[in-house]
Image 1 (cartoon, one colour):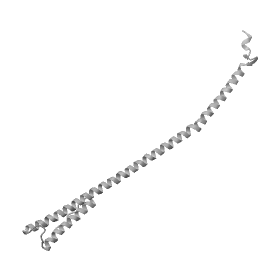
Image 2: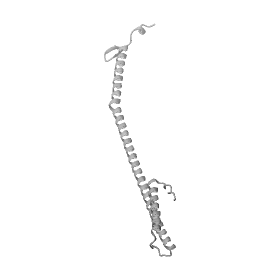
Image 3: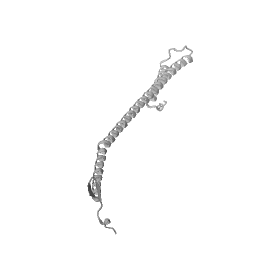
Image 4: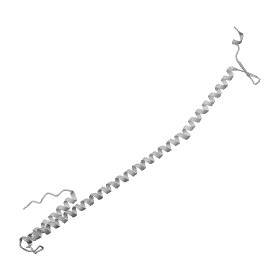
Length: 160
């Protein structure tokens, strides 16, 4: 066996000889310090760059969602208003048509009663017949208004 294997290893360079384990200790210490600096930079980058960027993007996303919700609400309100306007126009048209029908029936009834008496249309009728024709027209108009108001006709009035 040789005596050299028991002797500590040395590294020589630049005129000085340094034991190998001291060189390894120095490299290890520098490596650990570099890792610590790298870890610190990584953590700092996370908190100084990534987190604010993530929070900013989340805020933009929330704002965008709020805008979409507000737009949907505006569209919903506009649609409801249009539906109400359409329904009101439909009800008005139905009411106008119904009232026109009541007046047409009134004129037809008056003319029929005049012709039944052998007179020309628009003649003067006795008060009891006039009252019956007018009452029929007023009842028809009231029915038109009830249908327009509630969507269903009221029950017929009892006949006496």
